[in-house]
Length: 145
Image 1: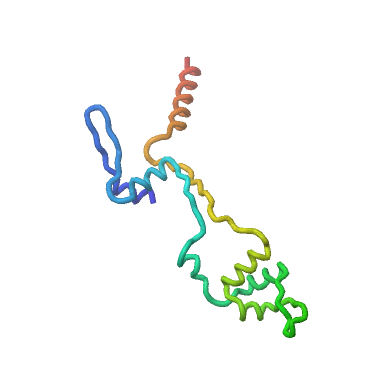
Image 2: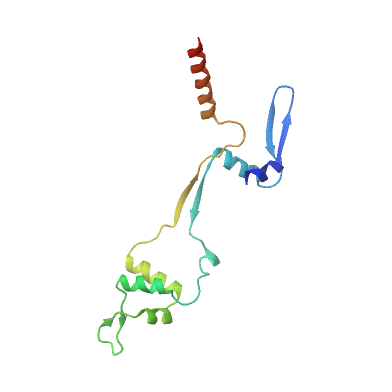
């Protein structure tokens, strides 16, 4: 990622100073995110991305439903019974099984969360690195004298 950013890196300079900038699209945003670190808000997929799970329930979902105590009514309406894995995979879709599992567990899953990406400085040094270098130079100068 960082090696591809160098194609877009440009330098502006004058008699007293110089600055680096990035040309083209999102390259400046990407470079800043890498240089300084960034905090992203993530969440569950919405719309079609959330509904793309079609087909029968998986065996693992069936096992989880049974472990949580999922029951189905008996044929003649007297009580309920534990369904087999085969019955669940043949009669429930992935979405239905997932909904039932969340309902049985009684917990709602997180709808949003935060991802903190650390800084990966590639342009010069950070302020912390600058302080470390200054302390090192001062310590070396004190030991020599």
